[in-house]
Image (cartoon, rainbow, N blue to C red; front, top):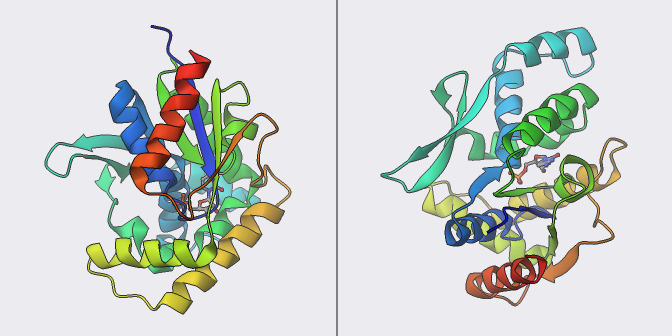
Length: 224
Ligand code: C5P
């Protein structure tokens, strides 16, 4: 059967990655969480005190960054590695969420990440989630989904996710972070978050995960 690219874009905490992971498992496809890549870059920039206004310093840092994904059979998930170190848990923390969108607007950062993502998906057979997959990374993706949901629902879902990782975060703080990131992500000059013209809109406010997965699988079946 022909292998395709499924691009899932949308606002923060709409359930993109949970949906993408399950769709990938169902189809035997690779799942690539592009948000994790921007989070890993942010971690590196913070650890190494990289100035976000110095293009030379940024480029040098990017040349020293190697991001890879490895499957952890115990946790049954793909985990992100930064220069050989597992940073999966670290990059999900609030201090990364609070800085990632400022790092993601930088053209040099986007250029480096997009090139890696295009390389990871060049054989197709991938489900990739992010903000610009259907518009910039794979504008020729056979299936494009654009996910949205009410901000309060998203904040509660994110709070639950963090709680499962033993991180207790106030709901207002989470909502503010989601709104701030959505604003920066949607208004940046370089590949802003927007719905591609040929993307299917999926509002998950009143959906359970099984319905979201079914929606994507149905669109995929029609594209095959
Ligand atoms: O998906 P996640 O919420 O982990 O993404 C974290 C941040 O990374 C987003 O808020 C956005 O600033 C950035 N991002 C991006 N382009 C992508 C994926 C994520 O700019 N394709």
